[in-house]
Amino acid sequence: MSISDDFHPDGRTADAEDLHVDEADDGTGDGPTRMTDAGEALRGAMRALALYSTAMQQAVRPRTDGLDSVRQLSEAMSATAKTITRQLQPLRALLDGLRVHLPPNWTDDHSLLEAIQLAEHEGIPIAWVPPAGIVAELLEAADEQDRYRILGERRAQIADACAEVLAEVAVPGLDEVVTVGSSSIDSLRADLCAPAQALATNVIDTTLRWLIARRAPIVTTPPDRLKYKAFQKDLITTLDDNTIGWIRSGCVLAPIRRALEEFWPPTPTDPGTPVPSYYTRHATAHAAGLTQYTPGGAVVAVMLMVSLLRETQESGW
Image 1 (cartoon, rainbow, N blue to C red):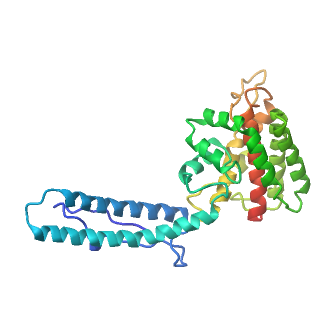
Image 2 (tube, one colour):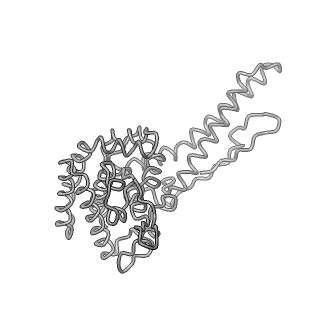
């Protein structure tokens, strides 16, 4: 949906004829279903609201040209309000469609954009786990360091939630992987964070290789075997170019991109790269130590393992 934002140079409020509306949909007539259409719908509604706001400002401005001007202004405001109502219809349909495809641990109180950014930029899993209350805490936290602190402090509650979600997974061919994953959760419950992180990382790796062998539609070009750098680049996590139904899957896969960031341990001739304090697969495998192995990092690894396995079942990968 798009709406012209031309205001009259004489200050007159735009009426219904000034608003040009284009319905953006996927050919079904049910309104926008792609993330790009979502943005257009929202922008159109906001611009229409801006027109209405302008009308309201003129309504309270002192008038010197008599009742006719007030009547004309009232009619323009009424027409603008009707246009806004019409424009909000596809946006309401869009929001209803979004709710169906959002992760079950999200609530209407959570900011969709901020949650997606959390998964994409900081690699923190937010789909399926953690519980809704902890998602809210993470979104309100000051920065990544604060979020890792919260994850570490809430690890017992998160471990219980992970166990409940993992118990729902029954994918033929992944039975033993799920069993080993349960041991990772048990380690986290026992406050054995380093073993939990290491084991969860291996389960994630095994699951990704299994998905590649099945040619699962999680990368643009399914490879014959797991090559981390190419796999990281080709992961389908960009939400702008995918349907709304991909939101949950995208939020599951987005943290994997950061988890597969390159890391090179030092050698006698090469200083390598600094050990990251946030969770990554390569640093977990090649840089055992207190910088990479942390309570927060262990929780991220376990949550990523659980969300990947649960989404594998839900999406039929």
